[in-house]
Image (cartoon, rainbow, N blue to C red; front, top):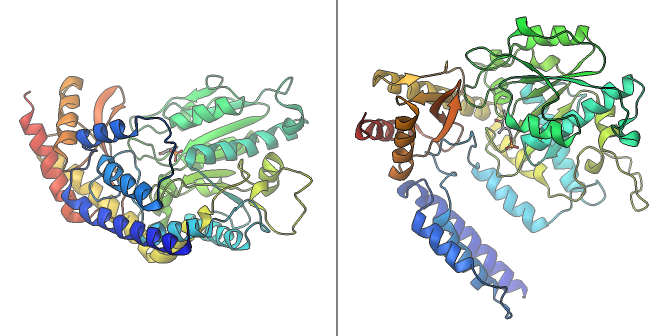
Length: 456
Ligand SMILES: *Cc1c(COP(=O)(O)O)cnc(C)c1O
């Protein structure tokens, strides 16, 4: 392949990508079942013997792949708190892919390392976290939870005279891990990965919004880790951080915050009060690919005790000479990795403080508008809409499932099902830069039309 071909292919990719995004508004939000079937059939074969041109490869990707996608980059996708991709951030990813940097260390890519450092500094600034904390850019909040809790595991065991990186967990002092009954599923997965056990935990009962009840905290002794949540994945509610952190501090416990989307409330002066108290924790996990609207996959781990994160993640090898600079490989579970800092930096640079505040405040206002429209139609909104999340039921479980299916096949918008406080419900997460007020009105109409169309 020569340079002219490369230029033609990249230009074609940009052209097709732009066309794809421009056409999103006019298509159904769910993946069209015929398109998914066509793609499945087309991919169902052995590896061809012959080579194919870049144009051929890319043409099939677009013609077969694009129609089979979910329109999650558009303005009427409300599933899984995901967010879209800001144009500046998307374009930054494309350029960074052309750079093809290996962002594991400073010497392997000074540019990637510097964008990463700048992005981490801005993230800490906008989330109100200490600048002296260490940060790591990982694939998502799951890995950010993992990274933070690995640092926690290191420090609480080190304080008990145990070197977990060297000795592992065999024979180690027991760690008490405290989580809320409504913690995100990824916390349990990560505790399993860290050898702390998915079930070997103390679960604190929660209130009707999914918040840990500070009055129900257990007695702690010995090494302990407490996991708080800033933004319940259904209700959007925040655990009472001030009370719990005060209690945890007295016991010498490490406090971790899962704030995958909720921590971004700190960026909006109207919503920052929700995050009050969380800044006193020891570690924080969040996503850039949710509310910051950065392309996948992009998560952030921030750890107050930089030495603990370094001790948990550091690596040594003959080819790894000390650079005197921050090498990402010493702060993340990964070694070779792409330059995710570039798109986080680009998203923050393009929004600025004011744009990010506006994005968060707008999505919260839109969620309130959805809730108000649902209530006005006599529907049951099951949560207090404090952030960007709305949980609604359409009667019993069977009927709610039918209404959700009708909304998804209708194609105007996409919302997913959930179980909230024992009830089958639908969850509407408003977290995209692309969602305009007209998208909200159209989606509300479509939801209410589906509700009317399904027999009671
Ligand atoms: C989305 C989410 C996660 C998991 O994040 P990934 O980016 O999918 O790994 C963890 N916790 C909460 C509260 C979330 O909303």
